[in-house]
Image (cartoon, rainbow, N blue to C red; front, side, top):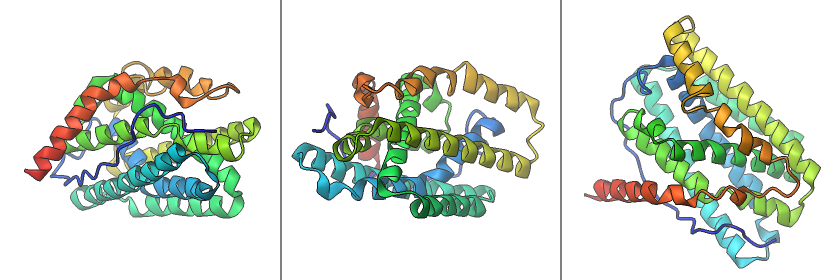
Length: 277
């Protein structure tokens, strides 16, 4: 199977320097902030897992365009891991959040996956995770106020990540289709990715809220419910695209959202120029 990515995949080295940030950097809401913090906590080791899963099959890919896409995918994911590692460390340094054990939990879970599952099974799981990140990225690009409600440089970090997840959203899928393509293996990989994603992020969010004594903050909890169910609808709005994955004929670029990238990429270029200056 040849690459079906219709746009260039550009590796950007943004090198974000996280300035002092509010403890609750998403509209002063502890529940939403810690949900996003939980996501970030999984990213560094998750990205390395995805890189390894795709790289395992790199030498089996004959299509030059897909080979080029794989190299760009690896470059982007490596940078995502590095920048979110720095962000997670800033959360520890600035707000003394107890992330070390949570990061170790992710490491151990992914280490178990490497021992328990074959290379093809891990690639199928990566395809599932990549679809999850792509549809969440699409929501962030589509709903401008998601990024605008994030404090300063943190918003820039998440916007950059969303742009690049969109650019490379079909690379792992195209590799899987080339080296295996089994529909039921792909479905099983998505089910496993869904279980891991929901279990780990909500478990970490709960733990961080408990640490801050914010589990009973009902105003923040209501704000989180609105965030997940209504506006922007982090669960409800992604359901149709999530379910599309289970169609045998599915491909990520059937959801062609390249039009959302233009303004965001312009913002990224402005950020790059500002860093150089």
